[in-house]
Image (cartoon, rainbow, N blue to C red):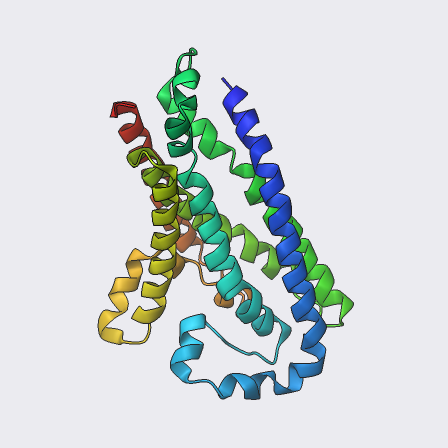
Length: 260
């Protein structure tokens, strides 16, 4: 039974290492420029319209926490990493169906439910590797430049991102079991996560439409509140975990009933 889980986990190693390298380079870049622009960061932020700052969740740019939250986490982590998990998950089932590998897999004594669950479980690799590695990079980097960040806040920032990333993966998984063509599934997963991010940000600009943002998973993960204000929204994380379970359940039901 765990054969699929082991094989899929091995597939995730290379991508996880690349992600760590990317975030390592980004973090190093921003840590290297912060000491020189710390005094001017707030003035630079004030030069932008308030709507722009609200959209990207920019606060206290003169602090290392606010600077890193705005420059690294508000877009690269929330959007790009969320898109990565949706993209990878969108190819889990659709890729095997399109290549006919799924026929070979199901010819063995394994249920369709088990196939879905083992493939989803393989996401533990990027979840653990990327979160642990980047958290260490951020803490060590901030300490090296003399602006050591609160390790608890950093840890919570990454821990509470897990439910959000899982929901992005769940979105991709549902598309993967629904669509036959892997390119279509991945494109739709990419677009949907990005559009949801845009919708949530835009909904903050008009109180009359703020409710629309409740449909977006990033509404329930506020990286700025966590790292800058040290506010940990465990209830929002629980909402995201519930949504993830529902998405996996829906994907499992759809896959077990469809004709491949």
